[in-house]
Image (tube, rainbow, N blue to C red; front, side):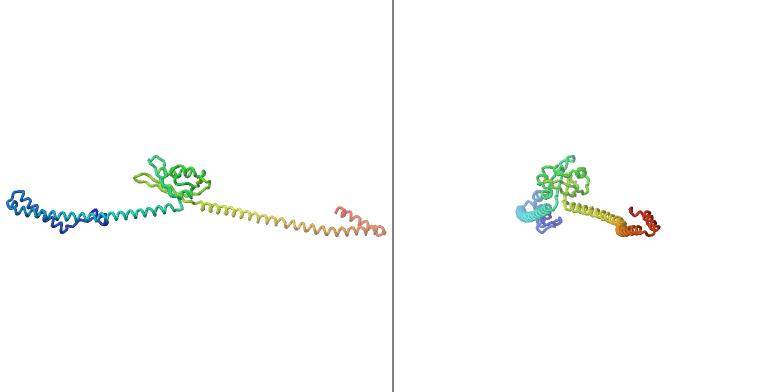
Length: 312
């Protein structure tokens, strides 16, 4: 039944009594009775015909047993062949599943890693890392596996405290939320990473499984967006300052323009007046020499002194 369970994947059931098994049991029961009579010295059981009959029955039983055993052996061989075929198929399916999983992990645009430790007090050491560690972090998988501290050494100095804190939480068996940090590649390029990990404990020990995502493009886009927002705020401030300056300039320019226009008007008007006054002066001199009204001439002279025409 167990072989049939493995081969056919059916629940184990109680074997029913077949025809051949019933015959064997019946013959064995009669032979057992006859044999008991022979051994006990019964006259009917110790006769020669009975012995011959018992021998024939014994041979018949032996033949039936041999046939039954042969049938069971052939059936067992068929079950074993079916079991081996099933195991081979299961092994092939398992290999295919492992191959698909390996291809999926190795072609993910991220670094998949697994850490473990030999004793509860020992630090975590790398057990596996996907090949994407080369394009993303600029190192070979053998470098990651051979130097457990190499990853921590490449962390940006400004982010080292947060990474060490997360590492201490993992070593204590505590769940650590995803965190972001920078790492400096061997070629000097800075890469932004997002780490998502989980702690797994089983009978063999404690492990850390996680994934490192390259978020450099996103961080650069965020930095560019922040810079543009800062430039926009600065432009808005400059626009406000420009509007204020334009208003102040307008308020200053209006009275200055009024004063300038007034001065130009007065300049032109005074030039004309000064020419008229000069002609009045010549007329006054001529009138004085001609002996005109002396009183009127004196009044004109007094008016010139009061007006202070020379000063104006």
